[in-house]
Length: 103
Image (cartoon, one colour):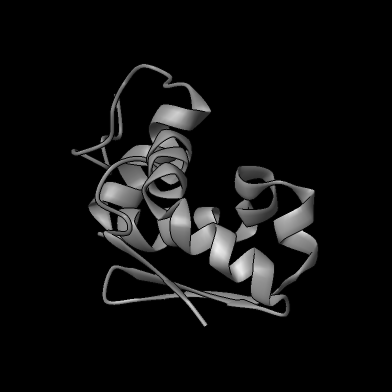
């Protein structure tokens, strides 16, 4: 006799990525995960020059705050704000951040 102690459990095996995404969705952690992914991959998105001059990156209320140690790099990032937002959308998906603020 089969013991079906988990009636909501799926019978077939799922790929790890799909199972992980379902878990994030079930606990409503998708947005937080994408925010952390964005922060951890900041250097990969903007390149080494900007990354080396970035002192901190954080997200609050769908705004990405970037603190830079170089004035010219800050100006360049401000001029290319829309391009950076497109690169972010390509990396982590749409709707994670709506605005880029340079400090």
